[in-house]
Length: 291
Image 1 (cartoon, rainbow, N blue to C red):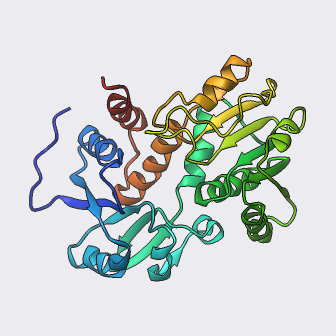
Image 2 (cartoon, rainbow, N blue to C red):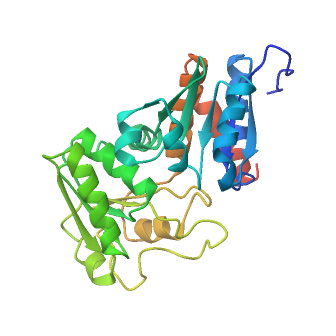
């Protein structure tokens, strides 16, 4: 679909990060704007870590309607927000900013994006036992979404167990009645998940392009075939982690759904219009598959 002309009335949004050249967000959002006729344009905004404050002031000065925030700025921008959503506050990260009357409203759309990706795949985790691999920002959003949705339990596994412990302790404040625990991410711990979990989520970057032959699950550790496997990595779409799970007979869910649904959340915040989710998904697929 042809992109409408940018005019003097076009509203601007963009992506703040360092780097941002790899992101699919400009393609995804601009396809959505074109499909809906929204007079918006999305631009990449490479911002060095030492320039975050100036960049945010610049957004207001240039009358931007908002921005997405990616690595390494998701925590750094929090101190400049006038309002924070519960998800942003409890995950300790902002990835979507809505600017209204010069005020910054900070959101974390990774949590809702992850949950919607599962539900879209006809997989409802409510009441289930979940293992989360990794304890970074994405893991925090995933655990927040799962606990808020009412899963039975979450085990966070990370190579540095202390980091997993911090995550569990922090989110236990928000969900005191949830069964959150942590273990070191070792082959023995992964082998011990068999029969204990219904869903395994990889939130690490292991297996992401260009290191496409890597997996957080060792080859010699049996896959619990009765569990579903979800990988937040979307480039490549079919990671080694998902290939291992599928070969063992397990159900798999790739990371594209989370990318699209977190983007849809931002789209709707900025425009006030329903997001064309399928258009946004196809725009990403075209890039990822070279179609």
